[in-house]
Length: 227
Image 1: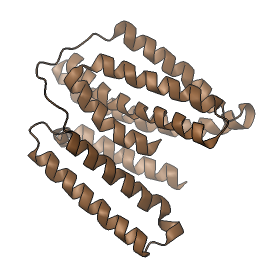
Image 2: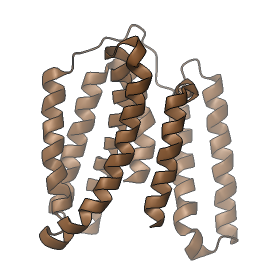
Image 3: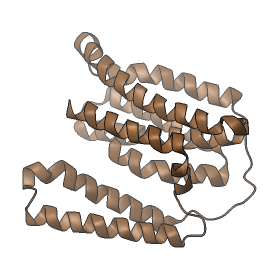
């Protein structure tokens, strides 16, 4: 879930900039909806993984929603609403981890996907009914080289983090993968700096309310996973 979300989010966020936020947001919520169904009825680990990958597209909801805020909100309220949306991600993650315990204990783990299914369906209907279409004034191609470099670096990085304790942090495999991660990430940064239309709008991180909220979310996420 985390891997697919990390890879899909920046790509779909840029596609929303190029082709309109409404169709991309509908597609993302549709993918989450299908992923919830697949995960809820899965009877094998292979099917379950497919469902989780589809659900990982849900990470793009926030990236696309940031764009919706920039399009729809009054100029003086954009930064505050982006900060509020970032805080919702952290709070929602915390509540999900806590509420999952009683749900599994009393209903079974399949309900971890049946309950979000209803909420996702409501969100899908809400976007379809109330979100107006936007028509981008400029069209250009998605920087696929940058997208591939980012995807590769995240895959290798996750392999290092997930297998380090099993393979040994000083083992040759882990050290080689760590070097590959650094090289791929450096290549991605170079591609982004040279691209006329980069994949990730790093300028947003200069907004005080955005980088402070994201920093707080980083520490909150690390704390939750550590516990």
